Image (cartoon, rainbow over all chains, first blue to last red; front, side, top):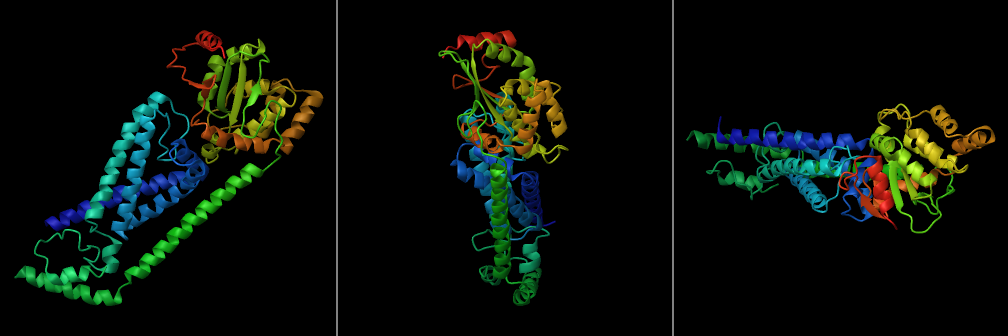
Length: 183
Length: 255
């Protein structure tokens, strides 16, 4: 197995980990958008009404980004947006922790009753998980090429590699570089 | 050499594909439009759903309530007594535990007019539990039942009856069970008939639906939440282990 294929496999794993997590998180919340709005309000970071609308939109956005990542369509864009979402969650949870709020992160739609001790115990776990997921996004933003992706099936083998991305083969010829700039 | 051939083959394979394959901008445009429609539709639907629940029923304020979103206050009628705010959802198991531990003590202090208690009757658990509950909107209906009982001065009795034989989380109550609770609360005869009319008409439903938003604005994210003279009261942190500790702690907090 070449180095390139190895990296493609890593890309596939990153896509599936981030994508499936986003779809599951969105799916568990989409049945109750009112609860999702409460979870966002609970962080007390956004103005109340803004938090409400963010709460309504969040599960849908998560599912869309998750599906794009799972099928590997517009991988880089989806990965950047998914990664930024994770960064936003990390900031939110860290801030809730620092302010001594006892909230459930609401990440997977649970929310509700939680004691301060339980919250303090869960914050680092939630943050660690989101850092891992953000790293999946970062990897795909850096190298979106991966196995079994619609990007590759629809738009050709290299087209998703923009000029800024390091090419897997150092000796990549000009023909391919010029082709990839057509993105 | 082999590498060179491979490169050429790839370039040849890729080039015609560019012409015949789907256009990236078109596909991207379609995905973006579908995504935007999905998000906007979802937000509009959720907003409508919220409007429907908050405008259903009447907009009357129950006895003991002074404003939309505000608490139902059982006042001691004396100045200087401690003020205890209680945020509860009738379906919440932790509220049930709290009530079985200190509920009788709270009722006793109310009866002796030693404290003023403000009940914030939340119904946010419906949002989670309606997906599994056979009795939808149990928190909302129970809250409406409690507000109807307040007409006859029986809010506390109805509240306490709901926490007796508290159902497993997600089971909730049928309307018939909530009517039985009214009888348990001591409503009978004409009072019971009035309660049943009130419960069917839901004149206080908009008030009930307004409490959750106010609680979220107050920073209450979980039930039960207690506030003593406006300060959040964490029982464990305050070293309160039993009903006696609780009584001592509350009564020591002169307002």
